[in-house]
Length: 253
Image (cartoon, rainbow, N blue to C red; front, side, top):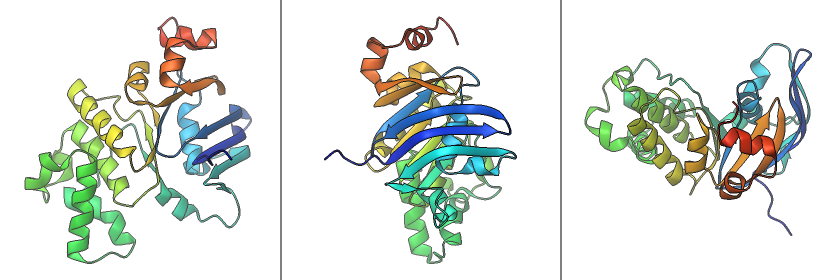
């Protein structure tokens, strides 16, 4: 008996009004792996991420066909709690958006909304989340300072920690390092390698090289279609489709 996928995407087609941006897409994501989904601009990578926690529902004129299963359950079933889905499947966006409050209150915000008021419990949640995001050592002495005073790379790790404080199962990252320097990028990549021990991660990397560094498996998209997927080392060294090889080696894109 094969192990059930953490996420199973089945015959997914996604539309904005009449424009089909994802076409008959099939892909499985295993638990505790990092899957990188990459492709040139307008390939549908960001839209694909947004379908996985139904952020795409918020777009005007959006509709879809097919199924997305989380632990075997269809996330579009009428009885599926969308708030619970977004707690389980958290998303970190390309541009970090700290809340206009302290570092501590940024992380504690979600748990407080969930009903956790105990100071010691919140302190533990905040420290654990910042540790997992590889940020604790840099901010522990200024935890009550404004989050807006953090650098761009620190703000992005803060946003990761804010998701982690909610106890997710899956983390979606849309080009989390696109505007960052190499040192900040390396710290986020280090945090991802640690996080996959506890979480399933789907990332749209900011370049092919990042996919090669962090991902266990990769999926290459082109114009809304899945061209190829597989183990990172195999796809990078011996792609089955010429378009994959051309994109990886920089011949187009």
